[in-house]
Length: 442
Image (cartoon, rainbow, N blue to C red; front, side, top):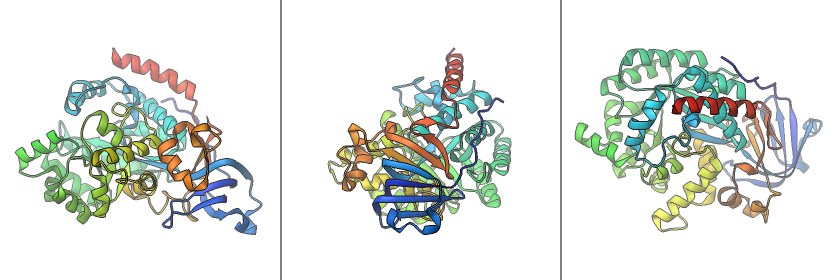
């Protein structure tokens, strides 16, 4: 399989002349900050005047006119679906899946998934995402693309109980064993039963047993549409969430994508079992799935992060846009402009999503000891003015876009430098994608 050249080792460096929005527990904003990176981790973040003397000699990276934030974390996507961007628009979910997406996916090869994932990595890095949770197939190829790009990812093989379910589970477990902790620790893995409506109760039982034995988390789709909930009620006499609880799914750590059509009992179940939710407002709006009750979930203590879903149902992977969607959707739905403030949207895209992936001890905020996954955005652009420190969180959510991202680091390695991709040949990827997408369409 052809692969792009991997990242070079990241050196120690000192980022100066930046405003740092740390997303720590205090919500600290430091207008004249320095961020020291050593061994791929943050050694210091805070006022430049208080920088420890032993860090002052590090190679300097000038961030004048930039704001530094933790890398954005995309809590749910299907990366290789970049190949199907624009292929099947303006359809309801079930029709979209069964008549367009599933038949097209049946034609995909491992090579297709490699290049589609590499394109997704390029798009995410370019718009400030440093980590993502992916559920798809041919995941060895996806993992190779992640390794080559330098991004961080939690990867899982999407499984259904159609066909040889036992072999699918065995293959998924083998993938997890091969790749968990790979790429210098940047790759982690989960098991991914696709959804209640594509996985039989018996298969779910097998997944639970193997996940418990291997100490793996689960990544699934849950309660995405009214139709899904109605089908669950007709078949099991329960909502999808109540059904999964009865099967013992939530005895394991679970990342649940969507959770749009949920009632008070469902939310209490999620809170009780610490089910963590990946909210996908762009995809939910485009597929007319509905509006997830995010403020209610948050008020009940449910961890909520943000995801883009795949590029076939969004149709981009820009997490900055997703933050804006999240805030605006809740405001118009509730008729309340205070429903989901900008600061909460930014927290969902950073610490919230990091918690969804069970990586909050390593990423999601700019704090000493955490991985140096750092994004710098250019304030010297018209859409970011007036660039006053007290307005920057608002600007990041309501005004910014992916094009404002200037620099991206993962593990202290520079993946995007002044808007230029360092680890991925974007032109080569584009040529491959156009050729493969045209072939798929035929």
